[in-house]
Amino acid sequence: MRLRIPQNAQAIVLALGMAAAAALMAVLFLLATRYVFQWTYVTYTHWQDWQFVVASLITIVVSSIAVGLLMKWAGPLSIGSGIPQLKAQYWKDTGIMPLKAVLVKFAAGVLSIGGGASLGREGPTLFFGAGIASNIAGWFRTPRHLRRAPAALGATAGLAAAFNTPMAAITFVLEEILGDLSSRALGRMILASVVGAFVVAAVIGRNPAFLLPLIDHVSWWLYAILPVVAIATSLFGVVFQRSVLSLRGHVKRQKALPRWALPVVGGLATWGLGVTVYLTLHKVGVFGLGYIDLTQALNNHFLWWVAGIMVVAKLAATIFAYSYNGCGGIFSPLLFIGGMGGFFFAGLATFLGVPLTPADTMALAAMGMATCLGTVLRTPLSVLLIVFEMTHEFSVVPGLLLGLLLSTLVSRLSGDHNFYDALLVQDGHRIHQIHPPSDFHSWKTLAVSALATPHPVVLEFGQESAWQAVVAKHPYQAFPVVQDGVPQGVIFRRDVSAGRTAPEDKSLMPAVVCRTDALLEEVEARFLETPAGVILLVDTEGLLQGVVTLHDLLRAQAATRD
Image 1 (spheres, one colour):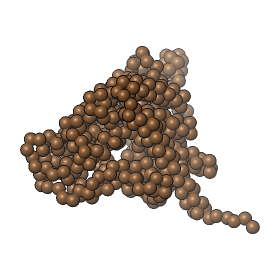
Image 2 (cartoon, rainbow, N blue to C red):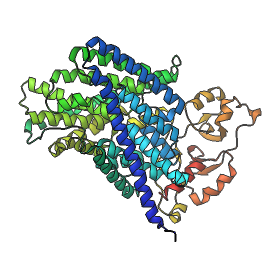
Image 3 (cartoon, rainbow, N blue to C red):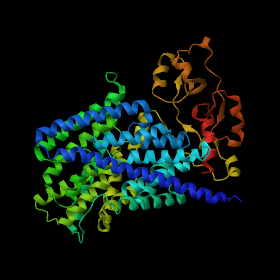
């Protein structure tokens, strides 16, 4: 007699398997990057200076070339940290993650971070954790439109295992990827986080990222200078975000270098900065994660003025590494920059006569980690938990809270978006997060504007010569054509790219138009009238306000079943 497992039990077993696979992959990634860096740069520090210079140059150039070629083979999904790409796949392609991009992100991340690029592990870990879970779900015949939940589960398990931060993993995926702290996926994500924590404990044991001495008591002098230090370290985050967006925009427009060669430029910039610091100070923190030097600072075994030099060098190296299509995240570099910045300002204050205790200095360094990272991410709850779980020091929490409050205000200097959303906008993506009703009865009375993309990219009628330039900047397959804001039709990307824009080409399709207050029940049938799968939404004066696609409709319907 065959044993029949109840369907609910099957779902739980599958969820446990996906979480375990993502967590194991994250732990393997942690060990691989650590081993490669130890085998290269840490080993080189025992050699003569000229040998360090030559060996580090060969290492970073060879690893950067390999990373560039791998990413060229896998496509644009494998470039960068992986979090903006994951967010786009989650919302625009229901969590579908190509396996080739997942495996390349893992391999390229090991080569990039282990090879000395000033980038972090969290972005690749989230990406391939979500990707392996999504693919496992597909192998077990989970429909394509239901892959969001496995992707969120895998991302949570991977981040929990990578940094041994199970609480922060849950809140970060909820805040940044899902954009909904009350998501119905919360139960599965808690399960995934627990599995991730168990896996990392079983494989490598208790593994806080930074080991700090006990911080018994902090003085009131800490809170007296905390606002100054919090604002200063937050400004480091502002400089990072604005500089990356500016330089990355220039890199995207340049034509002189092939895409696969771009990581080499970032690698050479990192090498130049890192070698200069090493030859003068004998510190290797500019290369890779920088945790060795940061741990020394957090334990008060560092010169405060050296920390200031490290901040400048690490900030510049990370800007170049990320802008030139590096493969890695930003958590670790920003934690380094903020932590070293907090330590520097604490040392400077002591030098100027402020009677700070060693506990005050360590607390300011931890607070700097939170404020610098928080300014860029704009997910204060996640950042608070990340720093707390990475340090295991409860006594720093009040300072973290005050610092994050100030960093939230300073972050507005970076622009309207957090770092990841700003990258998506720069790449032409507009992520419209749809949180529909939980049942189809309520669905029918939902206004279509709830699913629409507001302020869509449009082509101006009568300015056909500019259409190709507009289309090249955005990934969409169909574009509304308007005249003075009034829809004239819809045209496919392929027709614009091929130059078929003249009236005699008959490539401009009639627009199917609905009012923004129309109900979904009324609009669904109208998709049969549009070969482009696009309905244009207009206001009472007939001016275009948004678009809704058949893909939007299907994604939102799938979301009611997540």
